[in-house]
Amino acid sequence: MTKAQEVYERVEALVASGSRKADAFRQVAEEFGQPFNSMRGAYYAHTRSIGQSVPRKRKRQTTTEDAIDSAVIVLNRAIASIDGEIEVAKARAAEAKAEYEHLRDTAEERKVAIQAKIDALSA
Image (cartoon, rainbow, N blue to C red; front, side, top):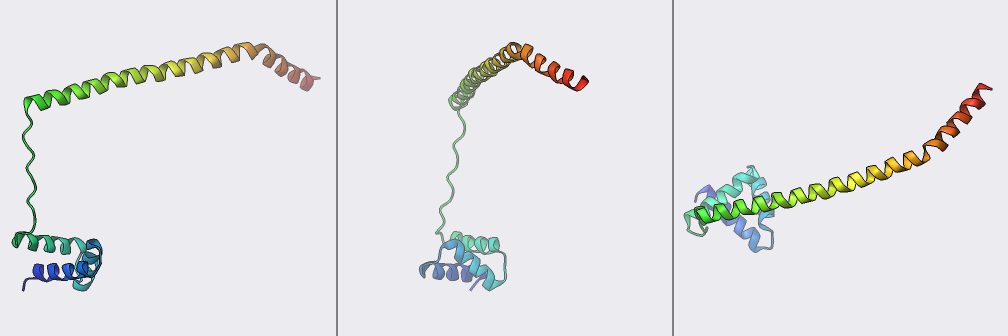
């Protein structure tokens, strides 16, 4: 019996008894004194050797139409982003204008209050 087969059978027994697969891998790793990922590798290597694992599907090649569609999506997002930047800048400008007007309108009374303090300290 190979180590991979031992790991596979032990993990399957733990899972059958109600353990989660990740917990089973941890327990088997402790029992064998090996790293967690080594146990996972051995387990899945054995599943491939007995034909239980499903091979990954290959991604289809990108077509010209897919590339164009992706480019259009990116460019539309760029347009929306510019509109968003304009809105943010407009809000900042409105805040700056309000701050300017407040400072302008209260400047004289702030100056008078400071001058009164200077006069009180100088007397």
